[in-house]
Amino acid sequence: MKFNLLGPEFLLAALAFLIFTLDLLLPKQRKIWLAVVSIAGLLGILVFSVSYLWGVQDHLFDGLLRVDDYALFFKVLFIGFGVILVLMSIGFVKQYLSHPGEYYAIILISVLAMTLLAASGELLTAYIALELLSFCLYILAGYARYDPKSNEASVKYILLGAFSSALLLYGISLLYGVLGSTHFSEMSIALEGMEGVNGRFLIGMALLVAGFGFKLAVVPFHMWAPDVYEGAPLPITAYIAVGSKAAAIALVLRVFSEALWPVVGEWGIVLAVLAGITMVVGNLVALTQHSFKRMLAYSSIGQVGYMVMGVAALSPLAATGLILHVVGYAATNLIVFSVLIVFYNSTQRDQISDFAGFSERSPFLAGALTIALLSLAGLPFFAGFVTKFYLFLAVANGGYLWLSGLAIAASVVSLYYYLMVIKQMYIEPARESSLIQASPTMLGVIGALAIVVVLIGVYPAPLLGVIEAATATILP
Image (cartoon, helix red, strand yellow):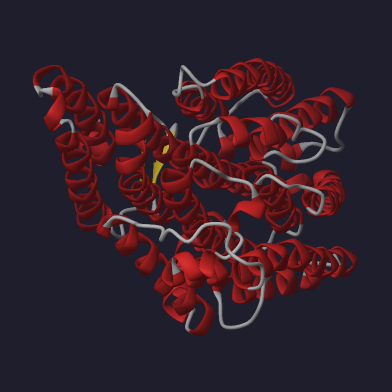
């Protein structure tokens, strides 16, 4: 057995246990070293993963886990998320949270779960990895244990998450009963040999879509998202908005392309309708929000609609556009949450109206937030424009011109509530004159992410080349 191909996963698990151990040994005033060791370890694992697994096409445990360019791409992406999240968390954890060792270790375990999700070649393996990720997020959402909103967010997340997991597992069992396998390749072969789909298969597909829909916050499975976003600690809200969605998309894309492609006609239109409803509901409800975190929650739901339509119109072009949009969305959203964390650490406020005069209190942060919001709206010269253009074009070419038109209209609607935030920052007078101070670490993270957003917007070719190599693994 080629266990060496699981080197990054073993190292992630070892790093998590190392953080647990160091937490027992380090005195309280030196807990900052837990974040330093986490970041150094993740960067080392990232370098090891790229150097050791580059170009490797293999599998483990008779296909339960895949080692290919697609898995490697997301592995690097998720480890990068982990590094940025730890950097974003340092000041917040020091100011608001206790037990930093457990906090950082659970983040590392969740990164491990995400890497296993992207590498899964079988439904039960994917389910176990998805549940490991979910358990980590349940804990992290309620990590501010003395905050009633955080406790409420965790309880709601757990209850609805357990219900969605039951739906997903039941759907998997029905698909196994019909197809006789949960391996993606064997499921595809069985579907090709079927003369027509039966009722049990359709019910299993419906339950599978519902389970995935909850993890992605697709309407009407989105009810958990606004309360969890509002109640969870800010760095964890960012992680749920970015990391968990990217991980779910990585799994969904592999499942629908490798296992369910022969019956694309059965599920394509269903996903297209769900994508359209999600875009409309997410962006319209975001218009009415006054809390920045709840606005971002509904904005995130709208963004998920764009992602799901890429799955509905599945093709090599659509898959490339979808992953490109996920990367651009992740970098952009991390800027928004990083600025929000700095603002909250200084003011303990997170309402949209609280950003009045923010440009006077911190010109750099206001500029970075403006770049991010314009990118989320899809305006030129920023990542959001290129990623949406590529994705919408791929969906239109896939036969869903009406869905692309609806997505464009939804993007126009989203521009309104993003501009309302910019209006507060640059037009409304400041209520306080004190400057917003950010640590050099946060300034560096925000500046680097802003550069990434602009680079993707003006020169996406290198990233597109890497993504096309990854998608060729699942959609040759």
